[in-house]
Length: 313
Image 1 (cartoon, helix red, strand yellow):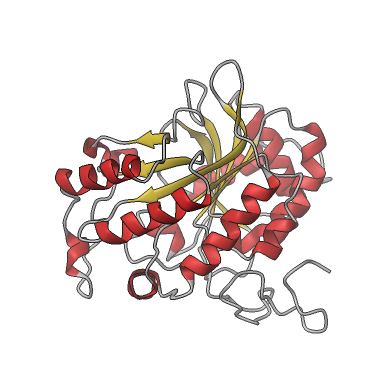
Image 2: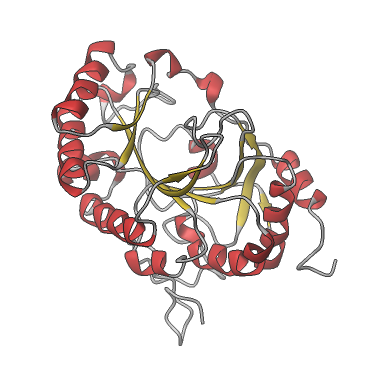
């Protein structure tokens, strides 16, 4: 029986939403009822130690258990679509991604499928020669992450919010900070050292991402306060790439781009609290030009191209 499910009725409580629904029959809060891949491709715009010149082999999962009003991938998080696969076929896809010659395998928005991903990695991991990156919103149960121990090499979580009122307003998750910080602590327990190879690619460790939002810079600073108290050596990716992906009538502050001075104030605060490892962005990165395309035909084509190692047909 897979972790996160009620043994009698297969009710899903895998993530902090605790939907308690049978996802084989209906959708949970993640809006999915099966394992769906929305994109399988090389991606060149992650942090330098992840993408580098080889690119990162991304596997984007449809749906999401965190409902951010500002999500730039809402095309697949709010309206999930793509190629449906089994656990065994996902394991095949991971080998296919490795064969692209990329620096790593990058599992994007995986939280609501963490049990199935763990099962696929148990099959594929002995054949993988590149690191596995777990690229998550941070809204994870620590118990679910423990099922990934020894299977994930690099954790790439967000720490999006500190204030419960902000996370309730922007993501419908007043408990976000409590949940995400516990998850990050578990990730650090599993990967206590940040290691890089001779080419500068990360092979093991944790990098915490934080997206600075317009008008919410004080909350960004509280996030940095926690990170500095947790581990001053932790790598932090401080992102300025926000742009309004869609009009928001409820939170008008999200309908404009981030001002340069807003980002600079948070960037300076990063150093003020004693953090010293990480990455920053130029505000010119705030453009949809860096967003991947999510095309069902392309996703299915990649799945079809994967060799049948763990599946028979």
